[in-house]
Every structure is written in C-alpha cells, then in structure tokens.
Image (cartoon, rainbow, N blue to C red):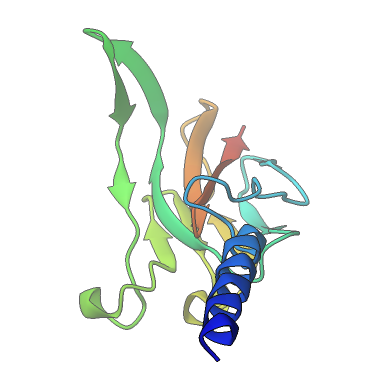
Length: 147
C-alpha cells in the first residue's frame, strides 16, 4: 500500500508537469491578426470595421495622433484613454472619442470587431491617428489616415 501511494504521487506530478504546456504563459500570446491594419478615409469621413481574426474579443487601450522621440523617450501626441459604455466602473474599454475619430467595440466590448467612424475633414490638411488595441496579453495598433 505504501508503494501505491508513492507511485500515485509520481504519476500526479508527471501529469501536472506536462499539462502546464497547454496554457499560454504571460507574454507568450499569439500576436493579434487583423483583416486590415490600417484604414483610409476621404475628406468626407465615413465608417470602417476592423476585425481581429484570431481572438473572439478585444478592447481599446487608447488613441493618439503621433509618436515623437524626445529626450530619449517616446512621447504620444494627444493620447486619449478609452472609456466604457457602462461608465468608469465597468472596465470594458469599448469606446474612444478622439474628436474627429471615434471607435467602438460592439456589444459592450464582447466582440472581435472595431468600428471606426471619421468626421469630415474641413481643414484641407491630411490627418492620422492610431488606435491601440489589446486582447489578453497581445497588442496591436490600427492606423487611421484621412485626406
């Protein structure tokens, strides 16, 4: 009986040791694959949808209009944090209002789609923005260009 307990414990250790390989480790998530990594709009504006192909859901981290390298570090121009349709306590991070660009993840953040809406551009200057997205421990950026 004593030997059975030792063999059972050894078998349990082997099962536990080999089963951990099935789970993604921190920092070991596959990159987010999208149907398009950038969207282009005319000066009239419009709407486009970007879809994450290998994740069933994702959320918006924030948006910014440019990145500059200053004093040895990256500086984001006009960085905005995402909000939640159900208020700050909801933590769904499914909406973003960048003034002239707007983004949302449908179903209160329970979707693999990102809907981007762009206002008309009356400035006659091209503009661009970036939307930072996350799914678990995987990150990506969607680029927006408007004439």
